[in-house]
Image (cartoon, rainbow, N blue to C red; front, top):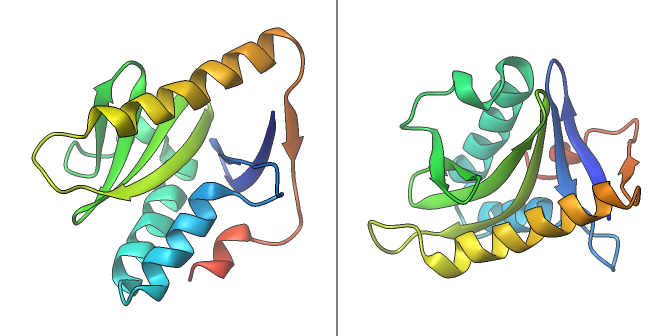
Length: 142
């Protein structure tokens, strides 16, 4: 499994790299931005920045909380960005979606759980590849 660094500070924030070398969460945020929701996309970038500096548990429940099965969500309006925490200083972002009801849909949590399970299997097999770059991947979203 390949992971692309999205932000690094005290905490490292990664997105999962797909077979086509894209990072789903970055593509999702660009789509949100291009859908005339620039403020929502910018809000997620700001949450990722804060998370990298202070960690996900430093964010209030109104901005980030647990949705079950080891999955958490960043909140920006009606949009959600799902992620999981690894060890003490790593966050892996899975994907975003628009929430249409009060409860986070099971299919979205299940999708994030599948990514988490694949991460854990890759980690156990020594098959994690962390991709770092000199450019700020999130600049594409801003």
